[in-house]
Image 1 (cartoon, rainbow, N blue to C red):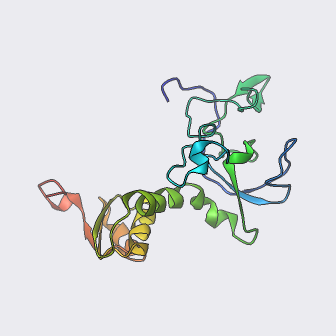
Image 2: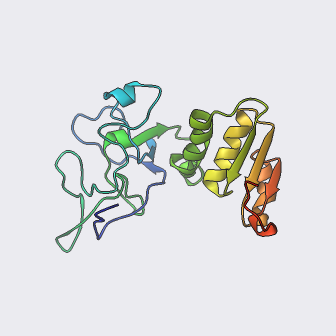
Length: 198
């Protein structure tokens, strides 16, 4: 952010179980399994009511905010001094406090240690391909970087039935795994002495 706050609890990707809820919260209850969402949804603003955007007026990604929306205060402290929130989720902790619009209820049978990547890595890459790039059936797609987000983008291209999904990464050890997500061919920029796009 432009004005970073420290100290703060970082982290934006996780899976968890609701321990308690605040007054008036009816969307989730103690015992529910949830994923945090750093770009939350108030479910009332024009963006939340639109199918074209997920940039909620109230809960959109905000690296500057260090406290809760209700009162601007942090819910974390040490020795009487505040520890600030991060992206409304602060998941690098055993417990966290979030706005109800920043969690998504999931099936309690889903293993939390596996589905935690759905809260960012998978949804970001897959959503960018399917909802934004929208490749045409039979088209070609290039995916730069074959980490979690890149593999999810490749999977989105596969679901959209792209015929060529070109995985681009500096680490050729990622290529075999990327085939499972739809990549049909690969480019390692280190193997070429001209720009990848050429």
